[in-house]
Image (cartoon, rainbow, N blue to C red):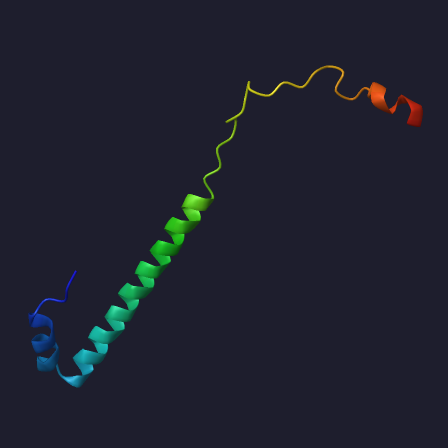
Length: 74
């Protein structure tokens, strides 16, 4: 979004103290915006889906049994 045409004129009409307050407010708004953007990124990364593969993976009862191919090494 482009800056409205009236902003530079309004800024010029403010006294030094009000320009400082307006600048501080703009910095506050920017910090809030950055914090929100960081939170959005964090929440997108931390969304873990559990049970996505539930029922699609099967572990057989003999899973821990020795493999016949390795009998000569045991």
